[in-house]
Each structure stands twice: as C-alpha cells, then as structure tokens.
Amino acid sequence: MSGRRESRGGGREDDRKLVAPGRDRDAGGDDEDDGRRDRMPGCLGLFAGWKKRHATTSARTGRVAAAPPPPPQPRAKELKEVPARSEDQEHPVETLPAVIEAQELPAEIESLIVSKIPSIYDRWSLQRVCGRWRSAALNCERAPLPLIVNADYTLSNYFAEGADCVPQKMNQLVEHPASHPSTCLGSLDNWIVIGYEAEFDPQENLHPIHDECCLVQPIKGGIVDLASPCSSRCRGRSSSLQVEDWDGTFSYSQPARAYRLRLQKVSLCRSHGCANFKIAGLASQGAQNHIIFCTPECKVWTISSAGFITMGSDIQFFQEKLFVLGGNQTDLFMIDFGPHMCLFPTVSRVRRCAAIDPLILNDTIQQKNLVQSEEHLLLVVRYLTLNWDQLVAVRVFQFDTDSRTWTEKQSIGSMTILISLSSSECFDASDRKEIKSDHIYFLDIFARSFCR
Image 1: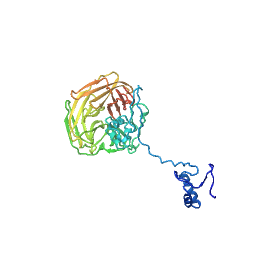
Image 2: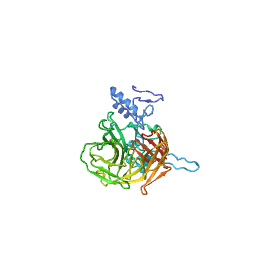
Image 3: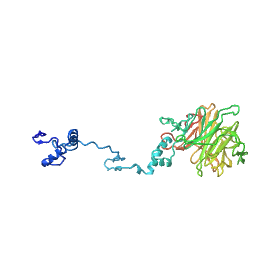
C-alpha cells in the first residue's frame, strides 16, 4: 500500500499520521479516513504536518517534542530561609522568615538604614527612589555630615581623608560665570549663601563689593534671590539702642540708606515660628564694619553700627539669638530680635554677655571662632605662629547663658567640630567611620588641614 512501510519493530504505521497522547491507535479505520480528510494539499499540507509533529506525540516513536520554553517571569522579592549562626551547634537554631516584602519594612528599620548614610549627596539620591524612602530620609533624626563648599565651588561629602572625599559638582542650574567672581559666605543644612562681586572700581571702593546675593541649594538647584548688597535708596527709618553692660549704643536703619557693601560672612537661622530664614552677616563699607540683617522677603538689608563691631569679628546664631564676637575678639555680645523678624528685621535688645580672656602664648597669634552645638555655644581658640603657617595649640570653651561665664573643656567627647569656609558646626560623630570623635577639623583660610 502506498504511504505505508515496515517499521523497525515489525509493525506497520502511518508515518504521516500523528495521534494525540492517550488515544488508541487501533481505534479503527474511521481515524485513518479522518486523517486523510484533514490533510491539506501542497505546501500547506507539509506545514500542517510539521506543526503536528512538533506539537503532539508521534504515533510511530511515542516521543513528545520539547515544548517551547515559557516566557521569563519576574523574580520575586524574597529572602531564602537561612539558618542563623550559633556557636553551640548542639542546640537548635532559629531561622529567618522565608519572605520579607519591601513594603512591610518597619519605619525603625528604614530610619536605621538612612542613619548609616552620612553623605548628604547620597541621601538626596535616596529621596528620589520612592515616597517611602523620601519620607525616611527627611524624617531621620540623625542628620548627614555638614555640606562643605570648596574654594572652587565643588562640594565635599566628607572632610576626612580618603577616597570618599572626591569633590562633587553643583547642580548645573547654579551658574558661576568666570567674569563674575563669587564667594560662598555661609551655609545651613543644604542651603548656602553666595555673593557675586561687581566689577571692581578702585576709584570708588577700597575693596571689591557684592552687587548680588542669593540662597542656593547646590544639590537640587533651587535659587532664592536676596536683597542686593548695593542699594541707592536715600530714605530710611533709623533707630538706636543702648547696649546693656557696655558703654555704647547700637544703631540701625531699615530700610537702609544708600550703601555699597562687601559681605564677609553670613549666618543663617531657621526660626521655629517662621518657615523662612533669619539672615545676618558681617559686612564692610570702606573702612567701616557693620552687621546686616534680612529675610528672603526683605527688599533691602538692615545695616547696624556699633563700636564693638570690628575687623575680625565673628557671628553665630544660637537659640534664635545672634551672638557676636566683637571688640577685637575680646567680648561676647548678644542681639535679640523682635517678634516680627519674619516680616522685617527689628532689634529689641543688645547686651554684652561676657569677656574673653584666654591664656596668651608667646610668639603666637590667636584666631577665635564661635561654634553652635545642639545645646551649647562654643568658642574655639587657635594659637598660630606669627606667619600663620603652623598650629601651636587649640582650646575649646563652653558658654553658660545663665551665669554668663566661660568654662574650658578638656574634651568634647563623642562630638566633632568643623570650621570651614562655609560653616562652623559641632555634631555627634559616634559610630561614624568617615570622621573621628573628639577632633576639630579646620578647612578655612587660616589652615588647610590642621586636625586636633
């Protein structure tokens, strides 16, 4: 018969006919007739037969063709059951849960993970993952390491030595044109204050002045314009106060009269009763030194003058009050603001708090800096050689606001102090691998890498 041949096992089977699995191939001639009717002529018949051979079990060999592999499935987020280590293997050990969903992590675990990330850059990247990690990064009680702005306007994650100190660039939205020199004047959290210098005219000014000033978020790229340090207003409201426990007055005007200022340092304070900043700065106008105030809403700066504001003064906000290291760094003064500081700066009280009389070392120069910690106001005194190139000694004093006295500290414990061009801060360094506790890091113009 045509279409039939002897099989190796001696049986006669139709090599074109394919029988579904589990079906009796000796069911009768009706099946054979149905197979003939189902055949298609020409190429279509060959294709149909090939498709059946690869889709069903062959009646001749009984083999099942391998089915095509299933599409890849997404891997489940799970943790395999792993036995915990035990020093004594005779006792049974507990195992971890088989599956842990990422959405079910407790808030305490998320906060712990965020607290182990010291870089403000890395925390900003974590905030962009999802809403849960953004909330965890923003609500973490342990703050990241302070933001450091280098002289070339790069940012440092850490200020300890190592590979992690690779500088990071600012956001591309923050422009620094070469023809418009700029200076970093201060910082708080992830905000910095930048002053832009005007074109220098030696016939009008002794030093270059700043004609623009703004608050900048160097990582996110946010920019808030502040009042210009150069103003041509000729009308202003002036007032003065008697400085308590000191022979002199404190005068200020707001809005300020015509001025052309060069900013030296800016200190920021975020008030509990106001969403915006209090901004205070040290500035000079010719040979005169001033303390200036403003808020982001103010159109002009408030300029103050007093006999204790001298060259080398330092300022620092503490408990929403501004403390001034004045009188050639020999006295500490306190400036208290009125209740409407959010709208415009007003001064309600000025007081001399205490004298500063640290030990004098021969053939040395003293450089003093006010530093704010969580609970105390600190004073760091550096003893440098006469040519400012070597550090001889460092002393730290703590101010008591009740008794108005200074107490020297022999150790700062688990704390670390950073004094840089952009900030002076004291913070907890326990469990930090990037920095050392009971150390002071100097990154300002007086010393590049001194460390105590």
